[in-house]
Amino acid sequence: MTYKEKYQQWLQFDADTKAELEAITDEAEISDRFYKDLEFGTAGLRGIMGAGSNRMNKYTVGRATYGFAQYVLSKGGDNKKIAIAYDTRNNSQYFAKVTAGIFAAMGFTAYLYEFVAPVPVLSFTVRHLGCVAGVMITASHNPKEYNGYKVYDNTGCQLNTEEANAALEYINNITDFSTIPFCEESENIKMIGEDVLSEFLKAVKKQSLYEEASDLKIVYTPLHGSGNIPVRRMLEGLDVTIVKEQELPDGDFSTVRSPNPEEKDALTIAIQKAKEIDADLVLGTDPDCDRVGIAVKHNGDYVLFTGNHTGAMLVNFVLTMKKDRLNAKSTMIKTIVTSELGADIGRKFGINVEETLTGFKYIGNKMNKYEADGSGEYIIGYEESYGYLVGNHARDKDAVVASMLICQMAAWYKNQGKTLVDGLNELYAEYGYYLDTQDSFTLKGQDGAEKIKQLMVTFREKGTSLIEGIKELQDISKGVRDLPKDNVLKYIFEDDSWIAVRPSGTEPKIKVYYSIKAETRDAAELRLAKIKEVIHGIIK
Image (tube, rainbow, N blue to C red):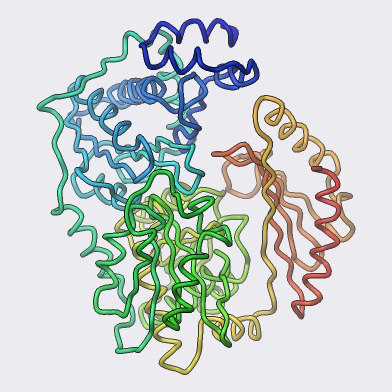
């Protein structure tokens, strides 16, 4: 159907949908809502909330659920237990209830959290309750207009590409929305309470590595998200001050431009509080509490860490604390767009280092492989986008365990008379200076999607001639090592610095990652500026 035909179809759904759509006077807005269906990818759905086939709403969530449930049933077996959780975003609880109702109507037992819960809690719950699959309603760190629908397999790992494509076939076959078995109440819906959350926290606590007394002072902000209770419970006994303005759930995230700890201004209020009380460390978790950002007091100022900084520091801390327990199978996992600093540290400790594509599902798949065939012993995994996991209790990134270990790491350094910045500088002195950063270019709508496709063609065509000094172009879409094929380009320089280009899988963006290795910061920044000038010239 054309977008106008879809628009007319949706006017018949219900009175609220009709009223919302008829209030739109901008033809471009109508086109954007209907020119395509909201895509179900390897991370499920993610999109702006509102009426339309290219939006998050009752019907797109219902269609995805109905198709996913059919896919699960097609695999056979007697297990019909599903775990469902949701974060603090607007409509998250509503979409979770819609999801639970449809599964219940199809004969599943739907275990639904009675309170907001983080992504890692859902991942843990799938395994803990022995479910065949799980669903998490969240758009992670996206702006307030967004929501999403993440799907998990029976190990608590997000669906791999093959599974997601198989589920997508069932979803795409649903063209008549009136066939979706919406159900508001059912005895097949069982509520999950504090008992399972407590088991999750016990599992996190087992990853504790340093509990010596310290006068470390911490400021924590959940950024209105689901981390408030679990993170605070893991930090009990420490000197923690909560940012009151950002403590309670608020789907509008009214105190921040975006609830994304990757962005500098997300921790502004927390840093102000830290200055007032002279705190050593600032922590901020995103709405679904799978990412954590930090700021560190150093020489009277607060220094923001990148995900690469924190990840490398955690690798060094965890391996130092576990050095007597490491063996030939001990393995850390990073993504291909994550700095090599953590990998260099891992190799220095003598452990195995594996790489995956961007997305924690690939790390989770490696963990499942180790568990199944005994080929590895998972120690730590992380990605540059502020996601870390220590322990086997989940198969997705976990800001609860990461927050606990970051605080323990900061206490360990403070008891040595050092800050985390001192610790990072020590790593640079030993392994060389790494300047890791990224650019993210937003290109919205159908025109934006086309431009992103064309930009990827342009970057491929330029190859090693893109910038002087490039020795190799790794086109992941054509197959590189044992990595799954994906639309990612990675340019390797003669000194092993690199840049990578990829479209975002969850937002209308093209992302460029830079990892510059040099003897000094000044030299790295000068080189970065020259490289960015070329990249920006192509994209803009």
